[in-house]
Length: 116
Image (cartoon, rainbow, N blue to C red; front, side, top):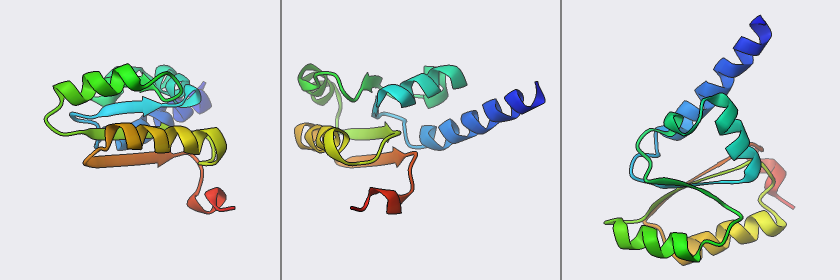
């Protein structure tokens, strides 16, 4: 039981790092990140974000609603896969649609792993 508790503590500590930049932001997660957030304690770990969205869903309505409500666009993206292929395309499309003034990208892989 102690090892499970330790793992949960590590997970919550990681989400606290993400939460530091979430105030007033639209947060986009891939499916695995969403599941990890759920098991770490849920959306309340992200503090005062304006919404939490699936990175792989249709973003047109989300983008319109968010831009209409936000005085400026602040986006946080959390991905667990390499920034290649469909993941890279989704992130680029999101940034192109929202044109955020501020963006924080968290990834579970080291920077060197993303290079081809």
